[in-house]
Image: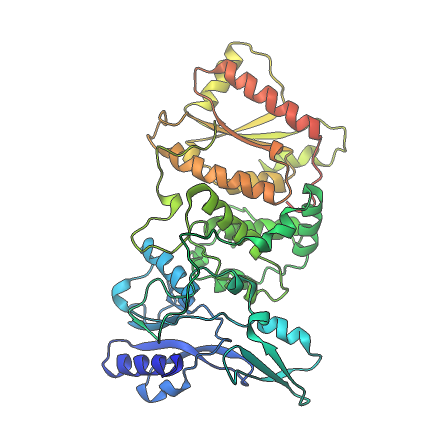
Length: 323
Length: 148
């Protein structure tokens, strides 16, 4: 039985037994090259649900404050490894109610970077198929067909993933995937190396260039599963004004730093913000760096242990920071 | 804060460096006062902002100061264990450590951001902290930030 069948089975059972009001999973978008979130209310409709390496959406976003409809809805949700870490991060701070959730964990072999595929073609993609494990076949509107190796077109965050299996789930869709030995190996921060090798002036020049394109559409913040202030967001506040309305690299970077500092200790680098950004700002430079430093300072990986408190909510007399 | 910084930010490369000091009411602000009462000579480049506790200081205050054109940011409060509110600075030091690393990550030299502890009685230490920090920032000169 494939993982997709497991998801459908779990969803159908939960809906039929009335354990959930609706079930959130993934389904096909306007064509089979794209996947979108799906909200299933009727057990007869579970065949819409889908699982393939295009299911990049972090569905935990739909559990945030003010998102469930009605507010006390019982919700079933599919989570991948990274999604489950964001869910655990929310549970650690009691920002979602565990008793209203039914979590289906989906062990994940890595998600395909659709944007990277898109850039391979001058034409629009109409179909992305996965005929066998590890193979990705893309068809464009003009009929061009090309095959890719899945490992070669994975998202950057997926190639460095340490938690491919959900860390928290009520039911798991299929067998676990092999995990890297977390005790023996350190996280791989190789994606930051190029940037960190730059001098201070070069960093500033690069950031100025990158952040001059930001349109402050709030996509990164809206899609972020652990960014929970909504309309109370200081980024939207004009009194007091922290981030000015000026459209310039400085304000745009400050805008992003607000996001980063506010999710510090909760953000497990699921990469949802990177994928949501319409102008492709490399936000991983900030949130991956933050996680690198948190790992260095506390040996802390956000959202991995349910009983743990996020590092900025607690303190330790034995901390050795400062002089 | 914004206006204070903006006035001179455009005054060219030879202007004196402008440093924003964010200090807690109970220790470092009083420490700076002690330094003043004791007539310890110190550079006049630091503008102090008084907050109730270092636990009140959001790392974003420092970033905002840099965005507005500050050449350096100095944060100071009670020594760990001496917090007026018992534990504010224990939380704060975790934040500051991350802030320091992230600020450097944005291409702002480490020398432009400093956080330390100065108690109310340590007027001399305040003088020393300010003098050393201002000297370090002056060595780099006024800042022309391109991104933050």
